[in-house]
Figure 1 (cartoon, rainbow, N blue to C red):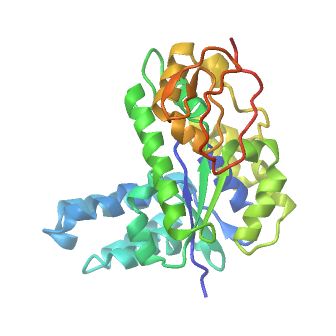
Figure 2 (figure 1 turned 180 degrees about the vertical axis):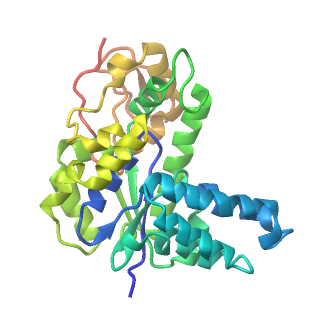
Length: 322
C-alpha cells in the first residue's frame, strides 16, 4: 500500500530545493522535480467548470502537463504516458487527478513515499487534506532578510524576483502564517517545523529528528544529496537551482548584513518583526517593546523587553553591525 505523501511548506528562496533533494536521497522516498502541478493545474480547475474536458482550460492543461514532465525529467516516456492518461478522461475528477499528478505520473515513485514541493502550499491545504487525509507536512522557514536578499539578487536594479519589496514581504508572511495555521490545527505530530539555518548549522541533528517524525531511520546518504543524478539534473535546469548540486553551504545565513542596505533591513524587521521573533530570529536594526510595538533599536544591546516566547530557540548571529 502506498504511504501517504509528505508535503513541503516553504517559501521560494528559502531552501525548498535543498530539503527536497536531501529527503529524496533517502531510500524510502522519492522527491520529484518541482512540477508545481498544484499551482499550475489544481488551483486553476475552476476555469474548467463550464466546459469540463471540452473546455479550453482543460486542453491547455493537457498540453502543459506532459511538457512539464518532459522538461524536468528529461525523457519523453513519462510525458507520453501522461498525455495518454489525460486524453482518456471523460470527466475531471480532482481527487483522481491529484493522485495522478503527485504520485502516478512518475513511475520512479512506485513503492516509495513521495515528497512534494509546492509553492504557496497554504492555498492548497484544504484540498490536500481532503485528498490525502493522512499526509504529513515539513514546514521549513528561512530568515526573511536572507530570503529577500536572495530574491533581490536574482534581479538587477531595485526590483526582486517577486516584483516589489511589499509583494515579496507579503508572500513570505502569508507562507509562514499558512505553515503556522497548519501546525496549530494539525499539531506537531503532522507538521515538522524547522529553520533552514538549523539545517545548515547541524544538518544531521535536524535530519535525525525529521526521520523520526517520518517514521524512518536516518540514512547518512541524505547528507550526500548533492552527488545524486537527480540533484545534477535539477541544478542544470535553472540558474536558481544550481546550489543543489553542491555540498551544504554551512555558512549561508545572515548574508543580509552585507547584501542589504540598512534601510531595507529596517523595513523587513518593521513589517515582519513579531513573526521573526516567533521563529527565533534576532532583530538587528529594530526592537520589539514590552507592548509589542516595533521601533528603532537605540543601541546593539537594546533588546526592547518583548516577553512573548518563541516557538524555536533563538538563533545567535552574533552582534549586529553598527
